[in-house]
Every structure is written in structure tokens, then in C-alpha cells.
Length: 145
Length: 146
Image (cartoon, rainbow over all chains, first blue to last red):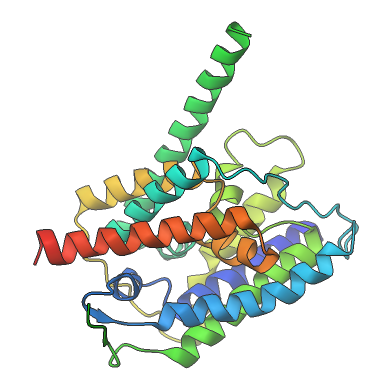
């Protein structure tokens, strides 16, 4: 059942990305181009998603378990550190270069769109690099306590 | 700086409705499975995921990949317009993959879920990647390409 909910969740998320225009890099770049002709549509995507999200997360705050009995796992980190800001800046540069963030890239790759498949392959390589750097970091920490 | 609007491409109703759908998906994953619908976290977590953690992640991503096929059953799929060259796509993909993992989230995890939850970390992350996105597009379109 949880697997099914996750599948439907991904499906609805993807349909939302297509309908909203987020899945079109030209539209995303039109939003990020403040100095050109600005298309504010994507602010409406955020507003719609957060409007529903606010209600859902308010519900989650007062509960320990989900409707299907799974533990509600919310992030516990609170530190505002260089990893958070640096990582976000690096992500933002990549987002501004191609107009793709992870969700829309996956949706387009799913339809077999070649440029999106290339982007997703590079994105996976970037994520694998992160995993490798983290392994090295943990190992060197253990070596020098 | 003078702000000019692109009214020809402005789609407030479709974008708001699409946003509501994204919110419904976030709510379904949270209310049903107790999980945050952060795409980079769900995908990146697969690299080295422990047993029992894999199935829901694969299912969510399969749903995301299947969305354009379901759309096609009802209507023609809007074609994405991608101006970036293959080299730019690879560089951008690497930056997005690395950056979102270091930041522990992307547009969905920080921008939608984190802001909905009132997380200060997500607010800082969202302001940072939006600022970097605005500056990058300004440099590419108006300084280098202008």
C-alpha cells in the first residue's frame, strides 16, 4: 500500500509539473530572467503547492504516525552551515544554466526526451560524486579521531 | 532596474492548478507514508539506501517518469523548449546533482516542503538557490550573451 501511495504521489507530482509549466526549461528561465521579459508564472506554482503543503504539514506536526501507520519522518537538522548555503548556490547556478531542477528533468527523461536524459545522467553522476566524497570524508574522520 | 512582464507566456491558472497538484502529491506522501516529497533526496537516497527504504523511492520515481505517458493518454504532451547545448546540460546536471545533495534538498524538498513546514534551513536554501538562479540567468543572457 505504501509503495502504491508513493507511485501515485510521484504520478500526481509529475502531472503537476507538466501542467504548471515547470517541466519546460524555457518557462523556468523566463521566470529567472528578471532583467528580460519576466514571466511570473512559477510564483503561482510555488503558491499553489505551499498552500496545500501548509495544511498537510500542520496535520503532520501533531502526529507521530501516518494514516498508513508509518513513522512521520521530518528533517531534524537545524544548522545553517556552509554545506547548506554552498550546496544551494551550486544547485542554483546549474538550475539557471539549463532551466532544469531534478523533478522536471526526471519527468522529461521519462518521456524519452534525449536532452533531458543527458541532463539526468549528469545529475546522477553529480549525486554519485557527492556519495563518494562523503565516503572519503567519513573514512578520513575515522582515521584521525 | 525596470521590470517588464512577459504576458504572452504568463499562465497563472495552469501554474496555480499545477502547483495545487504538486501540493496534493506532497500531502499524499506525508499523510500516507510519513515522508517528505523531496526529489533530490528520494533519488540520491537510492545510492546506498538500506533495505526497506528502496521500494517507496523507486515507486515514487516510477510515478514521476510515468506522468508524461499518462498525460499523453488524455492530451498531447507540451514539448519542452531546451536551448542549452549538450555541454551546458552536462555541466548543469553535475552542478544540480552535487549541489542538491550538499544542500540536502532542491526546489521540492526545500522550496515546497521546507517552506510549508516553516523550516529556517529551507528558507535559507530557497533564497540561496533562487538568488544563484537569477544571477546566473542575468550573466548568461545579459552580460555574456547580450
